[in-house]
Image (cartoon, rainbow, N blue to C red; front, top):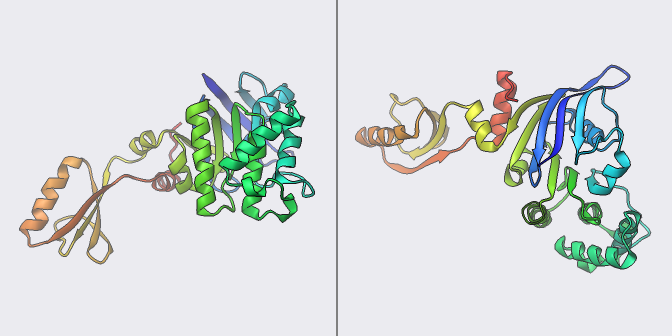
Length: 303
């Protein structure tokens, strides 16, 4: 089942800026979908369209089999949205904030408090449950915002930079919770970020954006195969023959590109025969960052 379906979606603002340029994609249930690109790429506009805050200029979209432009109220009951500046109440405690928002979604006070305490524990905020929000640090506020987003057990999450302002330990707890929701509860997560390394750690499907255009779609392995026709290899050696095409990246460390992995034993043999001592050979897969910048430089799209 596809939770999100977008076909030729466009958004042009009244002043003439084209924020989205005919993008098409689908997001299956249970996917952690990384919607990636720099500021101004069109990520936030897409979330606003998919949640019914904005109306599209052209194209079609479906979210949980609902039309966001016409059925936004129904959609809001089934989704959770976390923005970088989520609104909550400074004069209320952490648990009171969660209880308030849970009741807005039709939950009883007891159910919202029970679910709220469960979320606070998972996000490392149990000790701050009775502390007023005005005393929370930036990272604590971000984690409470995520708990608020999850209070009504939404089927689909829209997250905009969910780990912004978090320390490594808090980021780990957030990631563990998102993975648990995806794998165990089948929750679909539409994650917007410009942090490519972070997205590679947690997402299983990707959409790469730039200037309102969708550059590529697919899993990391699919994107690697479409973008590169070679393999990357790092060799640590005290001698690299000039007959081997390589790039020195640090003292005694060289990077090479290969057409086939079967070339590795031949290269190693050649270095050793010419007097080189090899301390390490490391095949290195191209990262999401490598793929993104290769797409930008090449000007090609894979959608």
